[in-house]
Length: 222
Image (cartoon, rainbow, N blue to C red; front, side, top):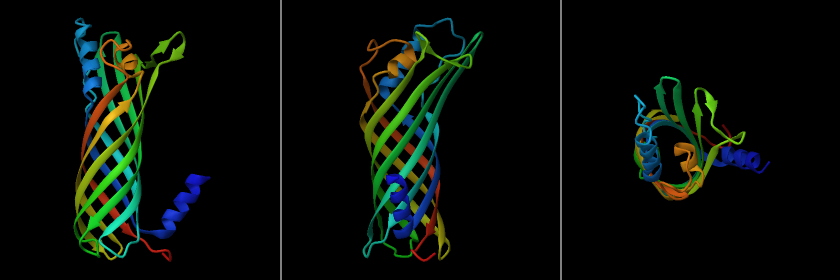
């Protein structure tokens, strides 16, 4: 109910609605080390497990009205990463689903939203990491093994907006983000079937995105 009320308030007050799609790169050092340990301890594999590096991202944001060049907003984004290794009688797939919900401080020097803009975003990160072997999720004593993750990310986005008409524009953009502490106590168990042998219960995470954003100008009456 709270989410629905917040959504209705945002739509009524938003000056701008943004929808984004992008390629997303991720570097999570301790997860990478766990994947590398998994490959090293299984020399019989013809095809090694790739690192969780490349994914896709989609997001939606509301930017509220403001009389000055600085505007505030809310954003929600979903990311998906996949790592697949096919071997004889052993097809292994890692899946990472991540959801970010955050606050935007946006700056644009042009009131018509044409030209360069920058966003500073602070968001709560939540995620779920799981592995399947030969199409079936891995289990421990009959219980599916999944790793939940949570942390906080600070990111910066820069784009250049090009108008289609007075109500719509689009912009290519680039974004970089850093989460110094992502808590995921079962991440290693999913990746390497061990716990705290390779690393502890957390990892830092760096991300980068290249994508396209569509901007729709809104008022309470349209």
